[in-house]
Length: 360
Image (tube, rainbow, N blue to C red; front, side, top):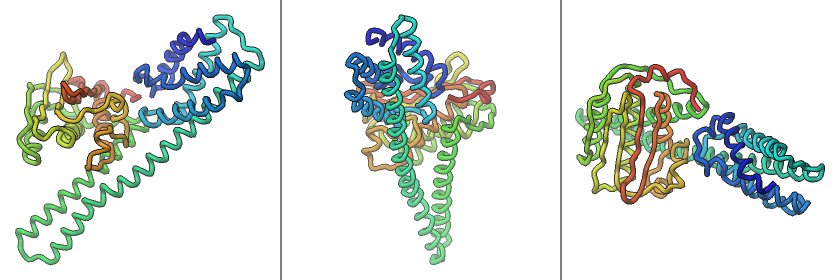
């Protein structure tokens, strides 16, 4: 049985990628996770004819697997259980193909360890989700309190002021912070819809992507500084104007927040055979390789983001992914000390054929 591990997981990967939508694009190490350890434990338990000696291993592997699935994938509990069911049938089918027959006692050990691992994985998944919910409530309260407080203070000051210029400035502050809260709520609602498997609603229109990019860069220069560098060309196509704009603003905002303030932020727009590729590059802190998979998941932030003073909902990059995939495109990230950090949105020039396709 132990010698068939490679064939078991090759067959399992084929099945899980085709039947569990959340698994389709996971890299092999992330997909298999700790399940090969469980398989080895089952083989050892059958060889030793002892389930009790491997209960501890089974519990820890299951809990770890459920924890990982909750933290760095878009899995839900149903997907988690489904992949275990597929693992069970893949093992049985591969063993039968090679005429390896489990007797009654061995079958009890096999099924007992699979069932226990499922239970522990579901518990581990639920515990992480509970932490996410608690963190979400805390961050929503924190992030909304600041602009709300600014609005309240400005409104109180308006009632005490007789200077028209001062009143206009206070009113502008109220408007700015109200818009900020509105954008935060829109980001939240859009991501909740996307995580539920629904595509972002797009109002498609024809425009030149370069005009949008240059306008966002100009506004960013006014808000931040003049360290933005643009390299691009005119690309006309059919996209959702506001979602693409918000996605670019999110990428630039991240580059400003986490990049080296002494180094330029480069925005590149390239035409690639009927596709538009929009890249935002900065130098500074490197995103750990292990975090790349998780930063596009709702309420997740990379290690460097967690350590920074700025607090956010972890919605920016999931929203960018939402926008890219709703247009039939994708987003990728690269980060190293030598090359810096780049986020690239790649979308077809005409998104109309993709607006009704299902999301993963």
